[in-house]
Image (cartoon, rainbow over all chains, first blue to last red; front, side):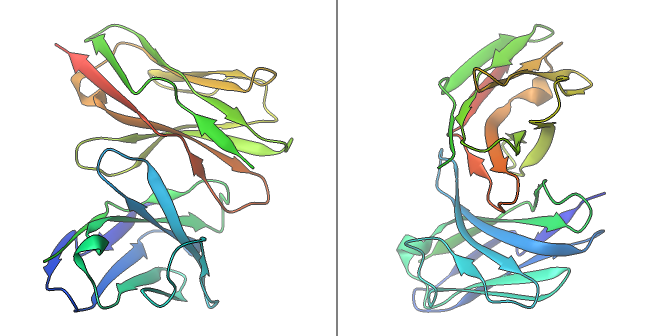
Length: 116
Length: 114
C-alpha cells in the first residue's frame, strides 16, 4: 500500500519550453501532496504544498509563476516548470499524505529534469 | 522552528554487522513525529521507520530499530545484520503535529562492505 508514482521519470528539454510532471497516488486518496527539489548530494528542499481543490502554498523563494502546481483530484497533482532554463535542471520529487495516516508522507520515485 | 541535525555525513559497516546512525532534533512542540527515510541509488525515498513522540517504546521494523531519547532530543537508527541492499543515503526527518511540513536532516551516506 501507499504507492506514489511520478511521470516522466526523466525528461530532457530545450531552454524556454515548459515541462509537466505528474504525481499520482495509486492506492490511496491524497489530501495533500508535496513537491520537493533535490540537488546532487543534498537533502530535499520543499518547494510547495498542495491540497486538493486549493491553491498551492509555496515556500519562500520559490517562484509561483515558474513552478505551477495543480492538485485537481485526490490522486493527481502536477508540477509544470514554465519557460525552463538550465538552472531549473534538478531532481524533482513528489510525496503524498493520505486521509488515513496524516502524519506520514509517501514519496514518488522522482523526475530528473535536464534543461539544455 | 524545527531543525534536524545528522552529524555523520558518511558511515560504513561490514556486512552482517550492526551500525547506528545519529540524529538530533529541536522542536518546541510536545506533539511531533520522527522518521527515518532511506534513499538508495535509485533515489526513491523509502520510509524505514516512524516514531510518535508520545510513545515511550522505541519503534522497531525487522532489522531496523530506533533509540528515541526524548529528553536529549535524539533519534538514532540502528541497523542490525547489515545487508548490501542497506547501502543508501539515510535521512532523518521530523514533523510537528498539526503542521504539514517534514523537516529533513542533511543525510548520512551508508556504505556496506562485503
